[in-house]
Image (cartoon, rainbow, N blue to C red):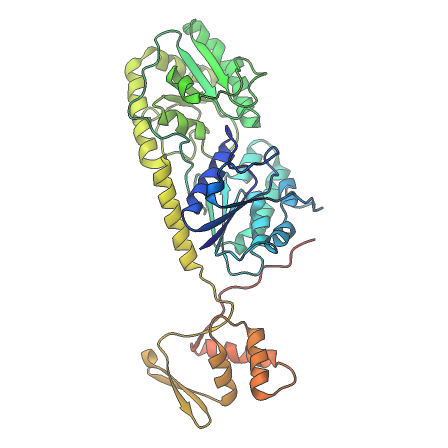
Length: 453
């Protein structure tokens, strides 16, 4: 099977949750067939370098701005028309997976008029994300864009399964540890990590350091807060990107994910669970995860309650051990990469099988044919019925093999009867009549809409 992955994120980039998900898709799809990865770098720093050449062909597609006042900016840089141009120099694909909503138009264009199965991973709920930040015009633009390309897809998926999307959860970046490490007694370290260039994470870090941490420090004066990740250098308690996050987590009593806005599942929580480190987060932070407050995480939504939850974990070894064990079990059962990858491949296999397309009408199953002096007799055993087709209808019927579209059937019909012009309208009417009689199955896909230029 020939497969294409279209992603706006560099799958090889470290410290970025979206790049991690892009890498998950690349590794998962490479096990299903011959994979070509298209990176359209509208959301990732340049240069983009193929970090996993063993996973198949890797192409960087330069964005092409197209003026349009309706769709979000990133989708204009990765437009449907750019997808069409890219497809002209690519082999035909059986399956195309587009990652993120704003690459949906590009993925539609990449498929073009082919019968490829098209899946778009929205990942996050971009409409809800922008609405939560008061960016209602951007939310409307995303809604319009998704409503436009969704009818051309065979499946929409997301990390949390919101709306009518199928769920493909995020995976823990690290394999779950066998046993959580016991952190040093002093100083008690509380760690927040993530991509701090991402606005919701940056807002969370500021709230943590200004509203929450002073309350923690009053109760546990020797506690130390560490904020790490890309973009954290200029933040209070920030130490920048950490090469060995695992070593830092082993020294941490707990981690925090004080998310106040945004959408999607928090890979930082999965990573903490995988290392056996308990987590304090908000209701929004745990949204989309199969977790229960007090069992897998501690949840608080105001500064005072959040501080109390942190102090509880710092002071209570039994609570830390219980949360650590429950989180580790949950991530191993639901969010470990082998489990999620297997489920994703099964979902895609089912979708491809359901979406097998015919460019033209095909003869129905279980029919018996008999030649007649004036045409063809078609027996329908299941209905105990016989249909007499005149020579004209018989020729159309015999030309319907599922691989030939109506235009080509009309051309071959004209050759058979020595006509100057293909009688397309007549052939289409005959096909419709034979479909109505259940002697033909209709074509099961249509050419994608003409791209905007």
